[in-house]
Image (cartoon, rainbow, N blue to C red; front, side, top):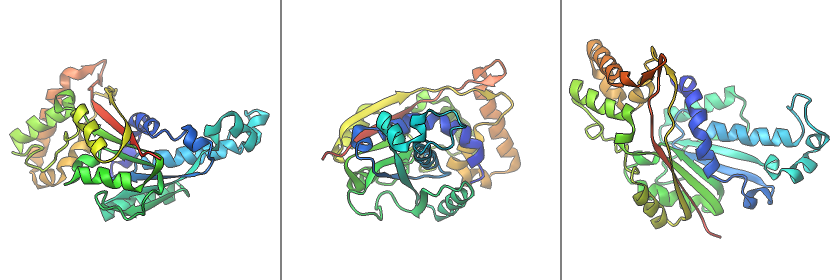
Length: 299
């Protein structure tokens, strides 16, 4: 959890399209006005599970007219009236954050307690064999997790199984390595200095990079109304920041820990050099590419 706070600003920016793809405010959810059940897979340091939990808790508060700084209208002070005008404000819900690593789950639980997120629980779970009954979640989310499964298509089928009819699942996955300069730099530098790249580390990071193939895999898992969108954000990070370290340490932690201090310094220096041509106005402006693969479960 060392990187949770440092990654939070970037997480908020890229979480939005993933949360939007879940269609939490769809007529099927807002007209029913029930408490949504959301499952987040491979929650890692906590996103998007924490963001979704805050969103659903905030909607509940807003619909009751609280926490609006005294600037709300009379409708906002009447939760029922407000929800009639804007059904999304009636949304409330419970989120289960899950991860296969027990240590990550312990850290997630501590964060949830510290943030007083009463509508979030943490469950240790393998997304290839989920410990939940059929048809119980209104939404299933997964951010950069499904490609790490030994059997990712089984994980897709398990997500479909636990999803309730009319529910929606959304998976954020990396686009091609050629469209992600940070990963290209990691691959070249770590291969050169430490003798290890993504393949040698057993990381199939780009297993869902092909848009058409990803949509087909969702269909074979049972999903319909499949939509795949591509996103190409470009951050703005101070040029003196070693912004690649969080991602690199999460992916290649064992190899870096076994490397000498001199080798680790050489890795940092080489990655900085490779990415230096993306520096503009004293900020790194490194593009990235990811896809969101979303699908629904029919009635």
